[in-house]
Image 1 (cartoon, rainbow, N blue to C red):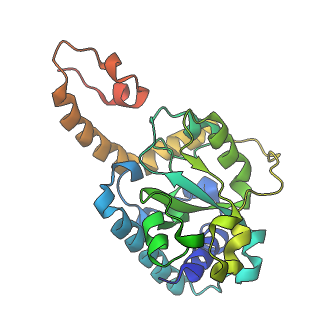
Image 2 (cartoon, rainbow, N blue to C red):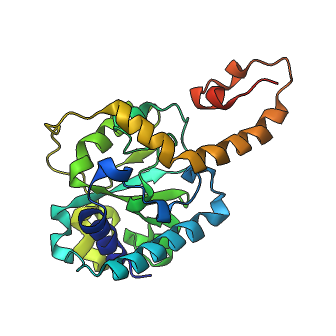
Length: 244
C-alpha cells in the first residue's frame, strides 16, 4: 500500500478532476460505494475503501493529470479522522457542513484515503499506535475547512476530528504536516444555496438511502406493532418508517 501516492491521488482528484463541490458534492457517481459508510459491515470496510481507491487511481490515469507533489499537499488540504460506527444519524453535521459531511457523519467518498486498520498494517502510526479499526481517514480540501470544522462543533459525539502530527511514524515525515488542524479556518465569503445542495444530496445519496431503508426494514421487525417510531429518537429512521 503506497499511502503517500494515495494521498497525492486523493488531493489531485479533488483539485484537478472534480474541483467543483456544486457539481456532485465531491461524490463522483462512478466511485459511489452505494451505501452509507457506517452501514458497510466492518469486515468489508477495508475492501470497499481499497476498491474505491483503485478505481479513482485508474480514472486519474485516464484523465492524464500530474499528481500534486508531496511537498505541496499542505497547500491544498488536511486529513480528517472519522469514527465510522459512532453516529446518531441526526443530520446536524450534514447541515452544518453544507452537505460536505453526509447524514451518517461521513466525508464524501471522493475524499476517502484508507481505514485505520490498513494504515496500522503498514506501521503508519507512531510507536505502533492502534487507534480503532473502524476509523476512516479522509481528505479535507482547503475550500471545506470551515464546513468540516462546523460539523465537528455541532456533532453531539466526538466521532470525527482533526488528527495530530505526532500520531504519524517518523518514516512518514513527509506527511506529518497533513495530520494537523489547519492553522487558519475562515468562513468563505460566498453564500451557499442550502436548498439546492439538499436536493443535489438527495439525488446523489439515493442508493445509500435505498440501502438504509432495506436495513431499517430488518431492524424494525424487533419493534412491536404498537411501538411508536419515536422510540428510535432518530429523525432519519422516523423519515424512513412507513406504517402499514
